[in-house]
Image 1 (cartoon, rainbow, N blue to C red):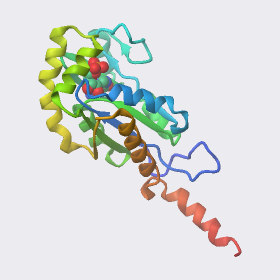
Image 2 (cartoon, rainbow, N blue to C red; image 1 turned 90 degrees about the vertical axis):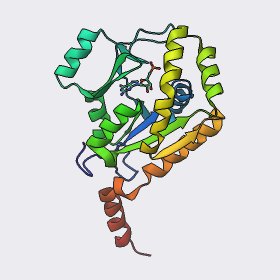
Image 3 (tube, helix red, strand yellow; image 1 turned 30 degrees about the vertical axis):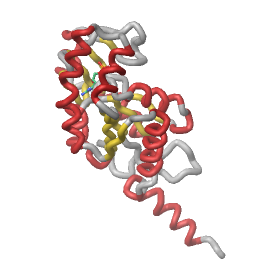
Image 4 (cartoon, rainbow, N blue to C red; image 1 turned 90 degrees about the horizontal axis):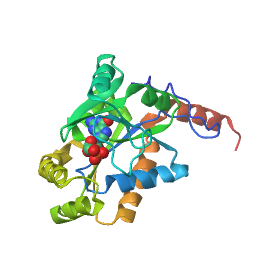
Length: 224
Ligand code: 5GP
């Protein structure tokens, strides 16, 4: 997607590297939204959330442009027809899609983008830019806990919860597609694990080959 090594980091004193797409997927109720929120609140991580468009009705706790851009089916189809979506999928009977523009902008500036998308979207993004994609699958500690988290949230109608639970077995079976799998028994622990992945992935040589080469060339020119 981005040209190799084409993206200088904004910070002049760090080694330049390419930005990547950090994808979190999980069945509904596995605690992914809480993790996403905590990752975004940690300013030092400097992550930008990809805000999807969806035809799903807005929940009372959600805000337009923050959690999603809520659109009609007609608008969604227009975006799709104009190739404005990096990927899209039908999930639990609604359409969801990732607007292409913001992703390209963030990656081109050498920063990382966070995605909360399902396994279908993950597969599509990966097919387009495998080396710039890091994928994490979040599992609930048990099916009983998954159910109780969905019910505690109390934001979806019972039939919507039932559909999400029914779909969860199919979603969970996709864990083998992902680079990393985290069992979210304790959200603080899961957060530490996601941050550790982020730190390690940012240090991968392949993401900053030119930046390291420049740094090493200068280093080797220095006297002892
Ligand atoms: P929810 O309705 O609970 O917000 O999201 C339902 C599912 O849709 C979640 O698994 C979420 O990750 C997924 N999702 C949200 N946005 C997108 C998107 O832009 N593309 C795809 N493929 N899935 C999405």
